[in-house]
Image (tube, rainbow, N blue to C red; front, side, top):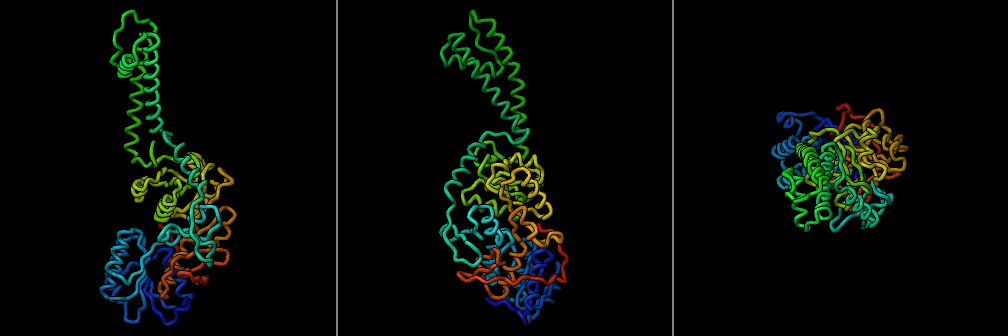
Length: 445
């Protein structure tokens, strides 16, 4: 694979951490980089001179990235481009009209490494293949067919089964308590009708329904006084239980129904993977794990996060809360989970989540996204609290290889370094020591 990019000139758009690391990687390999923040059409046209080899667009706004690529195709038809787009529909539309554009996203690049880190087996990466799933034992080894162990699937199914009709907040507790109370009164009244009043089952059930509907039982001659007192108390109690049930229904509907009481969006009780941070990387990882047949629980602190609606459509339950709080991790049963993956936008928050997870469940495998923040730039220092996946480093290695003429099939990390794979070939990506002179480091999205 070509590693030296001397005499090449690239235009890079974006101030994301991925853009900064990619700029540094290209400079390290001898290329010239024109780094632009948010250029106007005139500035982009001036930068795209005839000697420009390629355009790289690394933004967190798909619409802006799409616009820059279309403008560049108009200015320099056929010029090689690499763009980061999270939305699959937008990516497919861009490739259809600009076939010389290579589209990816940090989520796409990092998901195989994150998925493998969440599962036992010690693989460097696990990803989708044409006919199933592929695993990479390490960064350079040939790919092998992968199947999730049957014990993990069975444990995940059991966890989802045990999560049915389990309250997860005050609203669901009210709903289930009201429903259980009404059902209990209905059963007791039916039994009393059969044993005390000696009525047929249908008549006894009808009278019980009238009681819990607060319209009173059917008058029965010589009915015992104790039964009449019970019926009166049951009707009064049902009024309160019905109010609690109604309040729970309203709260459940207004909450966005991110967690279900029945079905596949319940909170699993065991054998699940907890994904903290439902941004682009977290959502893609959760969807990939669901595709493998595993149970997933998401955690996000922002109830207005844009990906929550997509998570709900994919059947992924998401708890709104701070993943660094013991109470939150206890509610999602971290002690019974298969793994926890902290992939939020703030890496210091991810470290806090990992530390709390270690306190709640000392034996829980923890995976965290790190590598951008100056305080924790040396990711190996975090190995004591979890498996570290440098999403930004993987993305920069992927993009740098793309602009050198290689179309990587995967970018993986093992003990020997970061490997760029192209079919059956694999080469270690050079370690970047140069700081990008154009862009300060900032948080990811």
